[in-house]
Amino acid sequence: MAEKLISIDGVAKRFPGAGGETTVFEDLWLRIDRGEFVCVIGHSGCGKTTLLNILAGLDSPSEGAILVGGKEIQGPSLDRAVIFQGHALLPWLTVLGNVAYAVSSRWRSAPRSEVEARARKAIATVGLAGAEGKRPSELSGGMKQRVGIARALAIEPTIMLMDEPFSALDALTRGTLQEEARRICRETGQTVYMITHDVDEAIYLADRIVLMTNGPRARIAEVVVNPLPADRRQGQIHHDPHYYAVRNHLIDFLVSRSVILRDTPPPDYDQRNPPVIRLDGRTPVAHAA
Amino acid sequence: MTLSLRMRGAIVSLLLLGAFLGAWHLAVGGVSATQVMDPEYAKLMGITATQGKSAMPGPLDVGRTILTHLADPFYVKGANDKGIGIQLIYSIGRVMVGYILAVLVAIPVGFVIGMSPVMNRALDPFIQILKPVSPLAWMPLALYTIKDSGISSIFVIFICSLWPMMINTAFGVAGVRKEWLNVALTLEVGTLRRAFTIILPAAAPTILTGMRISIGIAWLVIVAAEMLVGGTGIGYFVWNEWNNLSITNVITSILVIGVVGMLLDQILAWCQHLVTFPE
Image (cartoon, rainbow over all chains, first blue to last red; front, top):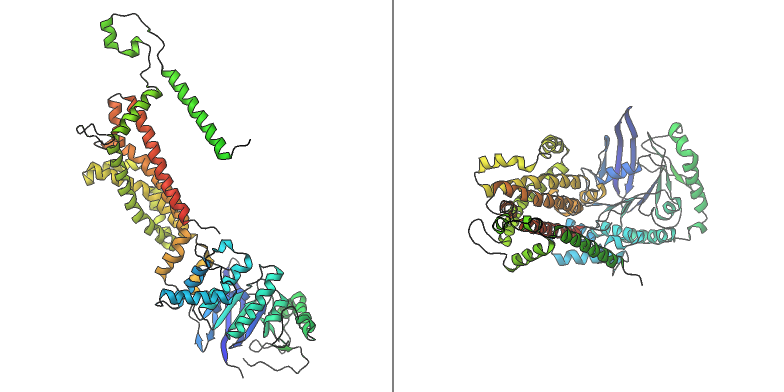
Protein backbone atom coordinates (compact mmCIF):
# COMPACT_ATOMS: atom_id res chain seq x y z
CA MET A 1 0.00 0.00 0.00
CA ALA A 2 1.23 3.44 -0.93
CA GLU A 3 2.49 5.80 1.72
CA LYS A 4 -0.07 8.36 2.90
CA LEU A 5 1.23 11.92 2.52
CA ILE A 6 -1.73 14.26 2.84
CA SER A 7 -4.61 13.60 5.15
CA ILE A 8 -7.60 15.92 5.13
CA ASP A 9 -9.40 15.18 8.39
CA GLY A 10 -12.90 16.51 8.85
CA VAL A 11 -12.13 19.93 7.50
CA ALA A 12 -14.79 22.66 7.39
CA LYS A 13 -14.68 26.20 6.11
CA ARG A 14 -17.28 28.76 7.07
CA PHE A 15 -17.38 32.41 6.11
CA PRO A 16 -19.33 35.01 8.05
CA GLY A 17 -21.98 36.49 5.77
CA ALA A 18 -24.81 39.00 5.88
CA GLY A 19 -27.47 36.36 6.61
CA GLY A 20 -25.42 34.34 9.08
CA GLU A 21 -22.56 31.97 8.40
CA THR A 22 -22.04 30.39 5.02
CA THR A 23 -20.62 26.89 5.12
CA VAL A 24 -18.57 26.25 2.01
CA PHE A 25 -17.92 22.66 3.03
CA GLU A 26 -17.81 20.69 6.25
CA ASP A 27 -16.63 17.33 7.48
CA LEU A 28 -14.43 16.77 4.44
CA TRP A 29 -12.18 13.72 4.46
CA LEU A 30 -9.59 12.74 1.88
CA ARG A 31 -6.20 11.11 1.77
CA ILE A 32 -3.62 11.56 -0.90
CA ASP A 33 -0.68 9.19 -1.25
CA ARG A 34 2.89 10.20 -1.96
CA GLY A 35 3.50 10.58 -5.68
CA GLU A 36 -0.19 10.63 -6.49
CA PHE A 37 -1.73 13.05 -8.98
CA VAL A 38 -5.18 14.11 -7.80
CA CYS A 39 -7.49 16.30 -9.83
CA VAL A 40 -10.48 17.97 -8.24
CA ILE A 41 -13.52 18.70 -10.35
CA GLY A 42 -16.57 20.65 -9.30
CA HIS A 43 -18.55 23.71 -10.14
CA SER A 44 -17.57 27.20 -9.03
CA GLY A 45 -18.31 27.78 -5.37
CA CYS A 46 -17.79 24.17 -4.31
CA GLY A 47 -14.75 25.16 -2.27
CA LYS A 48 -12.00 23.50 -4.28
CA THR A 49 -9.92 26.69 -4.35
CA THR A 50 -10.62 27.27 -0.65
CA LEU A 51 -9.37 23.75 0.02
CA LEU A 52 -6.26 24.47 -2.08
CA ASN A 53 -5.62 27.66 -0.12
CA ILE A 54 -5.89 25.72 3.14
CA LEU A 55 -3.50 23.10 1.77
CA ALA A 56 -1.14 25.92 0.77
CA GLY A 57 -1.39 27.44 4.24
CA LEU A 58 -2.76 30.70 2.88
CA ASP A 59 -6.07 30.06 4.60
CA SER A 60 -6.98 28.09 7.70
CA PRO A 61 -9.85 25.67 8.21
CA SER A 62 -12.74 26.59 10.51
CA GLU A 63 -12.77 23.02 11.82
CA GLY A 64 -10.67 19.93 11.41
CA ALA A 65 -7.10 19.75 10.25
CA ILE A 66 -4.94 18.81 7.33
CA LEU A 67 -1.90 16.68 8.04
CA VAL A 68 1.07 16.51 5.72
CA GLY A 69 3.49 13.73 6.54
CA GLY A 70 1.74 13.38 9.90
CA LYS A 71 2.16 17.04 10.84
CA GLU A 72 -0.64 19.57 10.91
CA ILE A 73 -0.38 22.44 8.42
CA GLN A 74 0.49 25.64 10.28
CA GLY A 75 0.81 28.10 7.42
CA PRO A 76 2.63 28.19 4.12
CA SER A 77 5.64 26.01 3.54
CA LEU A 78 8.31 25.68 0.89
CA ASP A 79 7.46 21.98 0.75
CA ARG A 80 4.13 22.86 -0.81
CA ALA A 81 4.59 24.86 -4.00
CA VAL A 82 1.63 26.66 -5.53
CA ILE A 83 1.10 27.20 -9.23
CA PHE A 84 -1.34 30.05 -9.43
CA GLN A 85 -4.11 30.38 -11.95
CA GLY A 86 -2.95 33.83 -13.04
CA HIS A 87 0.72 32.71 -13.07
CA ALA A 88 1.50 35.48 -10.50
CA LEU A 89 4.94 36.28 -11.86
CA LEU A 90 6.63 39.39 -10.51
CA PRO A 91 6.59 41.71 -13.53
CA TRP A 92 9.63 43.76 -12.45
CA LEU A 93 11.87 40.68 -12.48
CA THR A 94 13.13 38.71 -15.45
CA VAL A 95 12.32 35.04 -15.97
CA LEU A 96 15.59 34.16 -14.26
CA GLY A 97 14.88 36.69 -11.50
CA ASN A 98 11.46 35.20 -10.81
CA VAL A 99 12.77 31.66 -10.53
CA ALA A 100 15.90 32.74 -8.64
CA TYR A 101 13.70 34.59 -6.14
CA ALA A 102 12.04 31.29 -5.25
CA VAL A 103 15.39 29.47 -5.17
CA SER A 104 16.98 32.02 -2.85
CA SER A 105 13.92 31.79 -0.60
CA ARG A 106 14.45 28.06 -0.33
CA TRP A 107 18.23 28.09 0.12
CA ARG A 108 18.75 31.40 1.93
CA SER A 109 22.50 31.14 2.40
CA ALA A 110 23.27 29.61 -0.99
CA PRO A 111 25.85 31.52 -3.02
CA ARG A 112 24.60 33.51 -5.97
CA SER A 113 26.14 31.09 -8.47
CA GLU A 114 24.31 28.12 -6.99
CA VAL A 115 21.01 30.01 -6.95
CA GLU A 116 21.44 30.91 -10.58
CA ALA A 117 22.45 27.39 -11.57
CA ARG A 118 19.37 25.90 -9.91
CA ALA A 119 17.11 28.53 -11.48
CA ARG A 120 18.60 27.91 -14.94
CA LYS A 121 18.10 24.18 -14.53
CA ALA A 122 14.43 24.62 -13.64
CA ILE A 123 13.93 27.01 -16.56
CA ALA A 124 15.53 24.47 -18.92
CA THR A 125 13.25 21.73 -17.54
CA VAL A 126 10.16 23.60 -18.71
CA GLY A 127 11.78 24.28 -22.09
CA LEU A 128 12.46 27.98 -21.67
CA ALA A 129 16.25 27.95 -21.91
CA GLY A 130 17.29 31.09 -23.74
CA ALA A 131 14.43 33.20 -22.38
CA GLU A 132 16.05 33.80 -18.96
CA GLY A 133 16.57 37.52 -19.59
CA LYS A 134 13.02 38.25 -20.72
CA ARG A 135 10.43 40.06 -18.63
CA PRO A 136 7.04 38.42 -18.05
CA SER A 137 5.40 41.09 -20.22
CA GLU A 138 7.44 39.86 -23.18
CA LEU A 139 6.17 36.29 -22.82
CA SER A 140 3.06 34.59 -24.16
CA GLY A 141 0.50 33.16 -21.76
CA GLY A 142 1.89 29.65 -22.17
CA MET A 143 5.45 30.77 -21.52
CA LYS A 144 4.38 32.69 -18.40
CA GLN A 145 2.72 29.58 -17.04
CA ARG A 146 5.89 27.60 -17.79
CA VAL A 147 7.83 30.09 -15.70
CA GLY A 148 5.25 29.57 -12.96
CA ILE A 149 5.88 25.81 -13.16
CA ALA A 150 9.67 26.35 -13.20
CA ARG A 151 9.39 28.54 -10.11
CA ALA A 152 7.40 25.84 -8.32
CA LEU A 153 9.78 23.07 -9.44
CA ALA A 154 12.92 24.99 -8.57
CA ILE A 155 12.25 24.83 -4.84
CA GLU A 156 12.02 21.02 -5.04
CA PRO A 157 8.70 20.73 -3.20
CA THR A 158 7.13 17.46 -2.15
CA ILE A 159 3.65 18.67 -3.03
CA MET A 160 2.47 20.82 -5.91
CA LEU A 161 -0.81 22.66 -5.64
CA MET A 162 -2.19 23.82 -8.95
CA ASP A 163 -5.21 26.06 -9.35
CA GLU A 164 -6.46 25.68 -12.92
CA PRO A 165 -2.94 26.30 -14.18
CA PHE A 166 -3.76 25.83 -17.86
CA SER A 167 -7.28 27.25 -18.07
CA ALA A 168 -6.23 30.57 -19.63
CA LEU A 169 -4.22 28.95 -22.44
CA ASP A 170 -5.19 28.03 -25.98
CA ALA A 171 -5.89 24.35 -26.66
CA LEU A 172 -2.58 23.62 -28.39
CA THR A 173 -0.41 25.19 -25.70
CA ARG A 174 -2.53 23.57 -23.03
CA GLY A 175 -1.95 20.13 -24.53
CA THR A 176 1.81 20.62 -24.66
CA LEU A 177 2.00 21.95 -21.13
CA GLN A 178 -0.18 19.14 -19.76
CA GLU A 179 2.19 16.66 -21.31
CA GLU A 180 5.22 18.38 -19.81
CA ALA A 181 3.57 18.81 -16.43
CA ARG A 182 2.78 15.09 -16.32
CA ARG A 183 6.30 14.14 -17.37
CA ILE A 184 7.92 16.47 -14.84
CA CYS A 185 5.65 15.41 -12.00
CA ARG A 186 6.27 11.72 -12.69
CA GLU A 187 10.02 12.19 -13.03
CA THR A 188 10.33 14.17 -9.81
CA GLY A 189 7.79 12.06 -7.91
CA GLN A 190 5.56 15.00 -7.12
CA THR A 191 2.36 14.68 -5.21
CA VAL A 192 -0.14 16.93 -6.92
CA TYR A 193 -3.45 18.48 -5.96
CA MET A 194 -4.83 20.14 -9.04
CA ILE A 195 -8.07 21.97 -9.65
CA THR A 196 -9.52 21.83 -13.12
CA HIS A 197 -12.71 22.43 -15.03
CA ASP A 198 -11.46 20.47 -17.99
CA VAL A 199 -12.65 16.86 -17.94
CA ASP A 200 -10.08 15.70 -20.52
CA GLU A 201 -7.29 17.35 -18.58
CA ALA A 202 -8.33 15.44 -15.47
CA ILE A 203 -8.52 12.15 -17.36
CA TYR A 204 -5.09 12.66 -18.89
CA LEU A 205 -3.28 13.86 -15.77
CA ALA A 206 -4.93 12.37 -12.73
CA ASP A 207 -4.47 9.08 -10.97
CA ARG A 208 -7.65 9.82 -9.05
CA ILE A 209 -10.34 12.36 -9.79
CA VAL A 210 -12.17 13.85 -6.82
CA LEU A 211 -15.70 14.98 -7.61
CA MET A 212 -17.10 17.71 -5.40
CA THR A 213 -20.81 18.52 -5.26
CA ASN A 214 -22.05 22.06 -5.63
CA GLY A 215 -21.69 24.42 -2.73
CA PRO A 216 -22.64 25.62 -0.24
CA ARG A 217 -22.19 22.60 2.06
CA ALA A 218 -20.26 20.87 -0.67
CA ARG A 219 -19.04 17.34 -0.09
CA ILE A 220 -16.83 14.87 -1.87
CA ALA A 221 -19.39 12.94 -3.85
CA GLU A 222 -17.12 10.32 -5.34
CA VAL A 223 -13.51 9.53 -6.03
CA VAL A 224 -13.00 8.17 -9.52
CA VAL A 225 -9.95 5.98 -10.04
CA ASN A 226 -8.54 6.62 -13.47
CA PRO A 227 -8.60 3.33 -15.40
CA LEU A 228 -6.30 4.58 -18.17
CA PRO A 229 -2.81 3.03 -18.34
CA ALA A 230 0.10 4.95 -16.83
CA ASP A 231 1.85 5.27 -20.17
CA ARG A 232 -1.09 7.14 -21.73
CA ARG A 233 -0.26 9.87 -24.19
CA GLN A 234 -1.78 13.26 -24.61
CA GLY A 235 -3.96 13.35 -27.72
CA GLN A 236 -4.34 9.56 -27.72
CA ILE A 237 -6.44 9.03 -24.61
CA HIS A 238 -9.74 9.02 -26.52
CA HIS A 239 -8.67 5.74 -28.18
CA ASP A 240 -8.55 3.99 -24.82
CA PRO A 241 -11.50 1.60 -24.34
CA HIS A 242 -12.24 3.06 -20.88
CA TYR A 243 -11.98 6.68 -21.92
CA TYR A 244 -15.64 7.29 -22.78
CA ALA A 245 -16.90 5.55 -19.69
CA VAL A 246 -14.83 7.89 -17.51
CA ARG A 247 -15.62 10.95 -19.57
CA ASN A 248 -19.37 10.27 -19.57
CA HIS A 249 -19.29 9.64 -15.85
CA LEU A 250 -17.56 12.97 -15.20
CA ILE A 251 -19.81 14.93 -17.56
CA ASP A 252 -22.94 13.37 -16.06
CA PHE A 253 -21.68 14.36 -12.68
CA LEU A 254 -21.07 17.96 -13.68
CA VAL A 255 -24.38 18.27 -15.53
CA SER A 256 -26.79 16.80 -13.02
CA ARG A 257 -25.41 14.60 -10.27
CA SER A 258 -23.35 17.38 -8.64
CA VAL A 259 -26.61 18.89 -7.35
CA ILE A 260 -28.49 15.65 -6.71
CA LEU A 261 -25.67 14.14 -4.64
CA ARG A 262 -25.43 17.24 -2.45
CA ASP A 263 -29.16 17.32 -1.65
CA THR A 264 -29.81 13.57 -1.46
CA PRO A 265 -26.65 11.59 -0.82
CA PRO A 266 -26.99 7.81 -1.26
CA PRO A 267 -28.20 5.99 1.90
CA ASP A 268 -24.86 4.32 2.61
CA TYR A 269 -22.89 7.52 2.00
CA ASP A 270 -20.00 8.00 4.44
CA GLN A 271 -18.25 11.38 4.56
CA ARG A 272 -15.07 9.69 5.73
CA ASN A 273 -15.06 7.15 2.92
CA PRO A 274 -16.65 8.66 -0.16
CA PRO A 275 -17.58 6.03 -2.77
CA VAL A 276 -14.67 4.96 -4.96
CA ILE A 277 -15.66 4.50 -8.57
CA ARG A 278 -13.76 2.18 -10.87
CA LEU A 279 -14.83 2.16 -14.46
CA ASP A 280 -12.55 -0.59 -15.76
CA GLY A 281 -15.05 -3.35 -15.03
CA ARG A 282 -13.26 -4.59 -11.92
CA THR A 283 -15.01 -4.72 -8.57
CA PRO A 284 -14.90 -1.48 -6.56
CA VAL A 285 -12.32 -1.42 -3.80
CA ALA A 286 -12.91 1.01 -0.97
CA HIS A 287 -10.05 3.45 -0.54
CA ALA A 288 -9.43 3.44 3.17
CA ALA A 289 -9.11 6.86 4.77
CA MET B 1 5.61 66.00 -47.13
CA THR B 2 4.32 65.04 -43.72
CA LEU B 3 6.32 66.05 -40.70
CA SER B 4 6.41 63.96 -37.59
CA LEU B 5 4.04 64.87 -34.78
CA ARG B 6 6.98 66.03 -32.71
CA MET B 7 8.19 68.38 -35.45
CA ARG B 8 4.75 69.83 -36.03
CA GLY B 9 4.32 70.40 -32.30
CA ALA B 10 7.72 72.11 -32.13
CA ILE B 11 6.87 74.41 -35.05
CA VAL B 12 3.57 75.48 -33.48
CA SER B 13 5.38 76.03 -30.16
CA LEU B 14 7.92 78.30 -31.82
CA LEU B 15 5.20 80.23 -33.66
CA LEU B 16 3.30 80.76 -30.41
CA LEU B 17 6.48 81.91 -28.66
CA GLY B 18 7.27 84.30 -31.51
CA ALA B 19 3.76 85.74 -31.48
CA PHE B 20 3.91 86.23 -27.72
CA LEU B 21 7.36 87.90 -27.80
CA GLY B 22 6.29 90.11 -30.71
CA ALA B 23 3.11 91.22 -28.97
CA TRP B 24 5.05 91.84 -25.79
CA HIS B 25 7.66 93.89 -27.65
CA LEU B 26 5.02 96.02 -29.38
CA ALA B 27 2.96 96.48 -26.22
CA VAL B 28 5.78 97.95 -24.13
CA GLY B 29 7.56 99.92 -26.87
CA GLY B 30 7.48 103.71 -26.59
CA VAL B 31 5.50 105.71 -29.16
CA SER B 32 6.75 109.27 -29.00
CA ALA B 33 7.16 112.10 -26.55
CA THR B 34 3.85 112.55 -24.79
CA GLN B 35 4.31 115.95 -23.36
CA VAL B 36 6.47 118.92 -23.94
CA MET B 37 8.14 119.74 -20.68
CA ASP B 38 11.02 121.52 -19.17
CA PRO B 39 14.17 119.38 -19.69
CA GLU B 40 15.04 119.60 -15.98
CA TYR B 41 11.56 118.32 -15.06
CA ALA B 42 11.75 115.65 -17.75
CA LYS B 43 14.96 114.31 -16.18
CA LEU B 44 13.11 113.94 -12.91
CA MET B 45 10.15 112.19 -14.52
CA GLY B 46 12.21 109.63 -16.43
CA ILE B 47 11.53 108.07 -19.80
CA THR B 48 8.17 106.70 -18.74
CA ALA B 49 6.63 110.12 -18.76
CA THR B 50 8.71 111.79 -21.46
CA GLN B 51 8.69 109.11 -24.18
CA GLY B 52 5.47 107.30 -23.33
CA LYS B 53 7.59 104.18 -22.74
CA SER B 54 6.11 101.62 -20.39
CA ALA B 55 7.90 100.80 -17.13
CA MET B 56 7.39 97.21 -18.20
CA PRO B 57 10.60 95.92 -19.78
CA GLY B 58 10.41 94.44 -23.24
CA PRO B 59 11.64 90.98 -24.25
CA LEU B 60 14.94 92.45 -25.41
CA ASP B 61 15.58 94.02 -21.99
CA VAL B 62 14.82 90.73 -20.29
CA GLY B 63 17.03 88.92 -22.79
CA ARG B 64 19.92 91.25 -22.02
CA THR B 65 19.41 90.78 -18.27
CA ILE B 66 19.36 87.01 -18.64
CA LEU B 67 22.66 87.19 -20.52
CA THR B 68 24.27 89.30 -17.78
CA HIS B 69 23.05 86.84 -15.15
CA LEU B 70 24.33 83.92 -17.17
CA ALA B 71 27.68 85.64 -17.64
CA ASP B 72 28.20 86.00 -13.92
CA PRO B 73 25.69 83.97 -11.94
CA PHE B 74 27.74 83.65 -8.75
CA TYR B 75 28.86 87.19 -7.90
CA VAL B 76 28.70 88.48 -4.36
CA LYS B 77 28.52 92.24 -3.94
CA GLY B 78 27.34 92.44 -0.38
CA ALA B 79 24.60 90.78 1.65
CA ASN B 80 21.72 92.01 -0.51
CA ASP B 81 23.38 91.71 -3.90
CA LYS B 82 24.28 88.16 -4.82
CA GLY B 83 24.16 86.47 -8.20
CA ILE B 84 21.03 84.60 -9.24
CA GLY B 85 23.04 81.35 -9.34
CA ILE B 86 23.93 81.68 -5.66
CA GLN B 87 20.30 82.41 -4.79
CA LEU B 88 19.19 79.33 -6.74
CA ILE B 89 21.73 77.15 -4.94
CA TYR B 90 20.33 78.34 -1.60
CA SER B 91 16.78 77.53 -2.67
CA ILE B 92 17.58 74.18 -4.24
CA GLY B 93 19.66 73.27 -1.18
CA ARG B 94 16.75 74.01 1.17
CA VAL B 95 14.32 72.10 -1.01
CA MET B 96 16.67 69.11 -1.17
CA VAL B 97 17.24 68.95 2.58
CA GLY B 98 13.55 69.38 3.45
CA TYR B 99 12.48 67.01 0.71
CA ILE B 100 14.94 64.25 1.61
CA LEU B 101 13.94 64.48 5.26
CA ALA B 102 10.32 64.18 4.14
CA VAL B 103 11.18 61.09 2.02
CA LEU B 104 12.86 59.50 5.05
CA VAL B 105 9.73 60.01 7.15
CA ALA B 106 6.92 59.70 4.59
CA ILE B 107 7.90 56.43 2.93
CA PRO B 108 8.37 54.34 6.11
CA VAL B 109 5.23 55.83 7.68
CA GLY B 110 3.36 55.29 4.40
CA PHE B 111 4.51 51.65 4.48
CA VAL B 112 3.17 51.21 8.00
CA ILE B 113 -0.15 52.81 7.07
CA GLY B 114 -0.40 50.74 3.90
CA MET B 115 0.45 47.44 5.59
CA SER B 116 -1.57 47.87 8.77
CA PRO B 117 -5.29 48.61 8.55
CA VAL B 118 -5.24 49.62 12.24
CA MET B 119 -2.53 52.23 11.72
CA ASN B 120 -4.35 53.40 8.61
CA ARG B 121 -7.45 54.16 10.64
CA ALA B 122 -5.46 55.55 13.56
CA LEU B 123 -3.42 58.02 11.52
CA ASP B 124 -6.08 58.96 8.99
CA PRO B 125 -7.70 61.81 11.03
CA PHE B 126 -4.30 63.46 11.64
CA ILE B 127 -3.37 63.29 7.99
CA GLN B 128 -6.77 64.53 6.87
CA ILE B 129 -6.54 67.59 9.15
CA LEU B 130 -2.86 68.42 8.61
CA LYS B 131 -2.78 67.84 4.84
CA PRO B 132 -4.96 70.83 3.80
CA VAL B 133 -3.02 73.29 6.00
CA SER B 134 -1.03 75.74 3.90
CA PRO B 135 2.62 74.98 4.61
CA LEU B 136 3.25 78.69 5.22
CA ALA B 137 0.85 78.59 8.16
CA TRP B 138 3.52 76.52 9.92
CA MET B 139 6.08 79.29 9.43
CA PRO B 140 5.40 81.33 12.60
CA LEU B 141 5.44 78.18 14.69
CA ALA B 142 8.68 77.09 13.05
CA LEU B 143 10.30 80.49 13.55
CA TYR B 144 9.26 80.55 17.19
CA THR B 145 10.49 77.06 18.01
CA ILE B 146 13.51 76.75 15.71
CA LYS B 147 14.59 80.42 15.90
CA ASP B 148 16.42 80.18 12.57
CA SER B 149 14.87 81.42 9.35
CA GLY B 150 16.85 79.08 7.08
CA ILE B 151 15.95 75.95 9.05
CA SER B 152 12.37 77.19 9.34
CA SER B 153 12.00 77.26 5.56
CA ILE B 154 13.51 73.77 5.41
CA PHE B 155 10.88 72.68 7.93
CA VAL B 156 8.13 74.20 5.79
CA ILE B 157 9.43 72.31 2.76
CA PHE B 158 9.53 69.14 4.85
CA ILE B 159 5.95 69.51 6.00
CA CYS B 160 4.55 70.30 2.55
CA SER B 161 6.43 67.43 0.86
CA LEU B 162 5.31 64.96 3.49
CA TRP B 163 1.65 64.40 2.69
CA PRO B 164 1.53 63.52 -1.01
CA MET B 165 4.40 61.04 -0.55
CA MET B 166 2.88 59.50 2.57
CA ILE B 167 -0.57 59.12 1.06
CA ASN B 168 0.72 57.73 -2.22
CA THR B 169 3.05 55.31 -0.47
CA ALA B 170 0.21 54.05 1.72
CA PHE B 171 -2.05 53.75 -1.31
CA GLY B 172 0.59 51.91 -3.34
CA VAL B 173 1.50 49.56 -0.51
CA ALA B 174 -2.13 48.74 0.29
CA GLY B 175 -2.83 48.07 -3.38
CA VAL B 176 -0.11 45.48 -4.00
CA ARG B 177 -1.71 42.55 -5.81
CA LYS B 178 -2.75 39.74 -3.46
CA GLU B 179 -1.25 37.10 -5.74
CA TRP B 180 2.23 38.65 -5.45
CA LEU B 181 1.91 38.64 -1.67
CA ASN B 182 0.74 35.03 -1.83
CA VAL B 183 3.85 34.16 -3.82
CA ALA B 184 5.96 35.58 -1.00
CA LEU B 185 3.87 33.77 1.62
CA THR B 186 4.14 30.38 -0.06
CA LEU B 187 7.91 30.90 -0.35
CA GLU B 188 8.05 31.62 3.40
CA VAL B 189 9.54 35.05 2.80
CA GLY B 190 9.82 37.05 6.03
CA THR B 191 8.07 40.38 6.60
CA LEU B 192 11.13 42.56 6.08
CA ARG B 193 12.30 40.77 2.94
CA ARG B 194 8.73 40.82 1.66
CA ALA B 195 8.56 44.58 2.19
CA PHE B 196 11.73 45.16 0.22
CA THR B 197 11.44 42.52 -2.51
CA ILE B 198 7.70 42.49 -3.23
CA ILE B 199 5.92 45.50 -1.79
CA LEU B 200 8.57 48.13 -2.55
CA PRO B 201 9.00 47.30 -6.25
CA ALA B 202 5.27 46.75 -6.70
CA ALA B 203 4.40 50.09 -5.06
CA ALA B 204 7.38 52.02 -6.46
CA PRO B 205 5.55 53.61 -9.41
CA THR B 206 2.82 54.92 -7.09
CA ILE B 207 5.41 56.10 -4.56
CA LEU B 208 7.30 57.95 -7.30
CA THR B 209 4.07 59.64 -8.38
CA GLY B 210 3.73 60.98 -4.84
CA MET B 211 7.38 62.06 -4.82
CA ARG B 212 6.83 63.90 -8.07
CA ILE B 213 3.79 65.74 -6.72
CA SER B 214 5.80 66.58 -3.60
CA ILE B 215 8.79 68.05 -5.40
CA GLY B 216 6.42 70.26 -7.40
CA ILE B 217 4.75 71.53 -4.26
CA ALA B 218 8.10 72.00 -2.50
CA TRP B 219 9.38 74.16 -5.34
CA LEU B 220 6.19 76.24 -5.26
CA VAL B 221 6.44 76.71 -1.53
CA ILE B 222 10.14 77.57 -1.28
CA VAL B 223 9.63 80.80 -3.26
CA ALA B 224 6.85 81.93 -0.94
CA ALA B 225 8.76 80.85 2.17
CA GLU B 226 11.87 82.75 1.17
CA MET B 227 9.83 85.85 0.39
CA LEU B 228 8.57 85.63 3.94
CA VAL B 229 11.82 84.97 5.80
CA GLY B 230 14.20 86.83 3.49
CA GLY B 231 17.97 86.73 3.53
CA THR B 232 18.83 84.40 0.68
CA GLY B 233 17.21 82.27 -1.96
CA ILE B 234 15.39 82.82 -5.22
CA GLY B 235 12.16 83.81 -3.44
CA TYR B 236 14.02 86.50 -1.53
CA PHE B 237 15.70 87.58 -4.79
CA VAL B 238 12.29 88.11 -6.43
CA TRP B 239 11.03 90.17 -3.51
CA ASN B 240 14.27 92.16 -3.30
CA GLU B 241 14.09 93.01 -7.00
CA TRP B 242 10.47 94.05 -6.54
CA ASN B 243 11.64 96.43 -3.83
CA ASN B 244 14.31 97.64 -6.28
CA LEU B 245 11.52 98.09 -8.84
CA SER B 246 13.56 95.97 -11.23
CA ILE B 247 10.74 94.31 -13.17
CA THR B 248 13.34 92.93 -15.58
CA ASN B 249 14.93 90.91 -12.81
CA VAL B 250 11.53 89.79 -11.54
CA ILE B 251 10.62 88.46 -14.98
CA THR B 252 14.04 86.81 -15.26
CA SER B 253 13.47 85.11 -11.90
CA ILE B 254 10.06 83.86 -12.97
CA LEU B 255 11.65 82.22 -15.99
CA VAL B 256 14.46 80.72 -13.92
CA ILE B 257 12.04 79.38 -11.30
CA GLY B 258 10.01 77.78 -14.08
CA VAL B 259 13.02 76.15 -15.69
CA VAL B 260 14.35 74.75 -12.39
CA GLY B 261 10.89 73.46 -11.47
CA MET B 262 10.66 71.72 -14.81
CA LEU B 263 14.10 70.14 -14.36
CA LEU B 264 13.23 68.85 -10.89
CA ASP B 265 10.03 67.32 -12.27
CA GLN B 266 11.87 65.77 -15.20
CA ILE B 267 14.46 64.17 -12.91
CA LEU B 268 11.68 62.48 -10.94
CA ALA B 269 9.83 61.56 -14.13
CA TRP B 270 13.00 59.79 -15.24
CA CYS B 271 13.26 57.99 -11.87
CA GLN B 272 9.61 56.99 -12.22
CA HIS B 273 10.32 55.59 -15.66
CA LEU B 274 13.12 53.48 -14.14
CA VAL B 275 10.87 51.78 -11.59
CA THR B 276 7.81 51.35 -13.81
CA PHE B 277 7.29 47.81 -15.02
CA PRO B 278 5.10 46.70 -17.89
CA GLU B 279 2.40 44.24 -16.91
